[in-house]
Image (cartoon, rainbow, N blue to C red):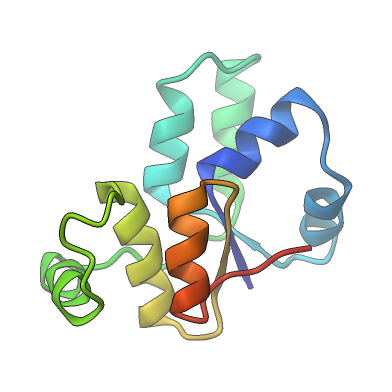
Amino acid sequence: MILVDTSIWVDHFRTRLGALDALIAADQVLGHPFVTGELAVGDLSGWKETVSLLRAIPAAPVASEQEFLDLLLDEGLIASGLGFVDVHLLASCRIKPEILIWSRDKRLAAHAGRMNLAWEP
């Protein structure tokens, strides 16, 4: 299963990404409430429909505060340049190891790669 980061969705909304369409058709995409939240505060076309569709995607697990903090310490992510949502996405993958992250955010993609959690089409 592929957890799709905000950066991929933004690109997809601008110019459809065939790889994302293929993952959606194969039921391989996972959402995350924090990604939906990041997108919802942006400039979405057809806001209600888009948010509704994003919320209909199966969701990755949301890390508890303890899981989040443990990941920060275990992986040396403090002051790494990653944001709150980025670390939560990595933590979701740690909760369910079959989940990988697809991101175009360079820092997130680099850390996901280092942790063997990255996916590229």
